[in-house]
Length: 424
Image 1: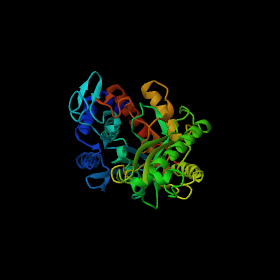
Image 2 (image 1 turned 135 degrees about the horizontal axis):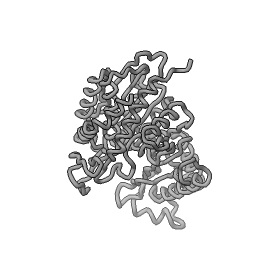
Image 3 (image 1 turned 180 degrees about the vertical axis):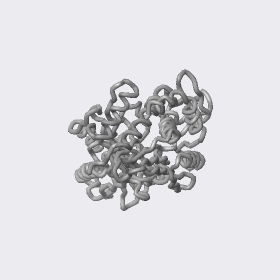
Image 4 (image 1 turned 120 degrees about the vertical axis):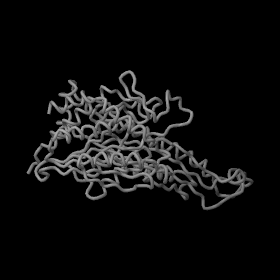
């Protein structure tokens, strides 16, 4: 195995070229619907390594690719899923890139280009590790699955679709090779929601005096103004959570409720009869999106009961969604990591042997598709090259040294995990 690991160093140029090839596929989301060519490349790459391929459109122009490599003794040895997303963060016209974001540059020990850190570097390292294992005739007793999914950047949960399809949620362990700076991580979760206030009556703007002054005798209200009470209630709940909830590795108050977008009214000549508030809720790894949504609803409905108009016109709630593009809504389930799990311990040990540094097991301040794998009952961790200072950034880049360490670690881990016997 030492000979195979040594080839990562000796063939570093091939690894760098593979990262560059993936970056050259322009796959920003939004606009999305642009991963066909990139996913075809991944499918062909995996076919060449002996994988069977399942490819299907999650959305037109955005297919998932899942490769399966049957182990030589699947019944007795442990299986692994490697997961990564092919979409990258959007690029705005006014961003001052050194060069075109999809024309990668190699300089000063780094690869620069959109997706280098998040997460085409991670995907390339995984593919290269598989290639070296196959070229060197390394037999894997356990099953190996690679999921190259779409839609992570816009909450389209290609990973959820992969888990639902053809028993894709069956594995003994999963590694999401997303941006983690080579930390072994879990994550909190995110859910978006819409809070709607709607009046069953519509009034002309000239009726406002009769609605707000003594003797007017018109019972009505502006939905926009009433939404201000809802926002105050959300702030109260956010402060309450900051005081009463915590999770190791997170600063107090990380569980936030962000009033992100407000929409209301129909015209300046009307009293606003409807107002909608789009919120983003962050929660801790030991919480579920269903749980926090219920907490928000219960608190805001109690706020409404204390208002003379809202008690008869209570807010309604719509949570989550399968796409920020199609539905303006998303869910990222949380992911809790057991540091004593056999897979976590093995990955930490391999990381230390390869890098010479003790593995850091902590929590990501952002979210990935890892929550969907965990939600499916698969013990899962996030482990990949690149850091969040570079993810989504102008002149995004990944360290070549870190990429090499990551590729070696993943290669060794795949081999050792696949040779781990299942407990009977």
